[in-house]
Amino acid sequence: MKLSVLDQAPITKGHTAQDALNYAVELAVVAEELGYERIWMAEHHNTNGFASSAPEITCSYIAAKTEKIRIGTGGTMVMHYSPYKMAEVFKSLSALAPGRIDFGAGRAPGGDHFAMYALAEGRQPEVNHLYEKINHTLQFIKEEAPLIPYYNKVIASPQHIVLPQSWLLGSSGNSAIQAGKMGMGYSYAQFFNGYMNRQVFDAYRENFVPSTFMEKPEIMISYFVTVAETKEEAEYEAKPADIARLLFMRGQVDLLRMTPEEAKDYPLSEMDRMWIEDTRYQHLVGTPTEVADFLRQEQQTYGFDEAMICSIPHSQETRLNVYRLLAKEMLH
Image (cartoon, rainbow, N blue to C red; front, top):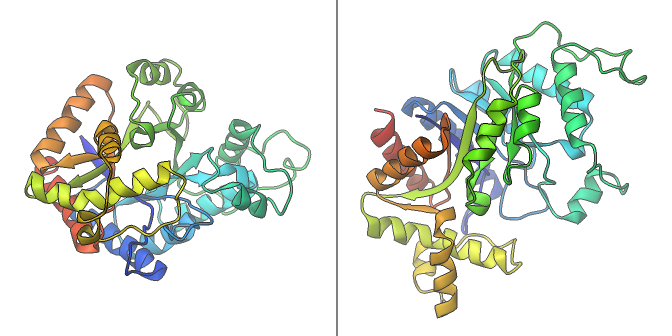
């Protein structure tokens, strides 16, 4: 199984946004050394909790600091941008790092409604024709101008470059068939709701049409993971993320993640503890062997090709160790 990295550039308590972006670069370098397939940067707006607001910029910097790991966006939130501009951004990235760039397209806003309207300059955000926007972007990337009057007189520069891989992100299964028809890879976020359905992935494969971006269907599943040498240590490091999920569910979306020491003494009601336990399928916690065994079983059940790991312990060293331990268990 191929392993990859999803990074949201999290800002944990006691660290700055600049730290978070520097840590993203460090993580990419370490992931490359460990044999991870790719690293994707997420897109988040109007939040103090994540520093990844312009993933394509971070990707370009990471590309200059690495040599072989694939780099992309998980995802570019297409409602906010012109297909023409997105195509030129990813063609430029691919010209600078040929054979290493992924255009990961997402249909979510990546922020609240205030961010949506700010990005749309006060206009009604584009939410109804997102598959069409993605298709127009793909056409521009492969140098086929969409048949629309204001598009058919322009070219997306730079021309004649190695095409990036193109992926469609999903979290409910509704986008699987569309991804197949457009000849894109399908990246499914298991950690959003924990829901998995083999029929969704089968529908993607059945509807897949080979394209210049993807010769055969490729499915990648994103998991939220905390591992450590022992189960007890993993639970200790995972508790801040569990509390963050709980607070997010309550609408407290902009709090910095606390330290494990603070989380250890955080007052949780019995109902809080039950909620965390009942939703633990969205957060894989354990030893490397336990998590690796679970991922291999998931692969057998659902037939995906690649697991993308998102991990947000409080400290950078602990986070790097999560990826080291998983690589040791699954890649070597």
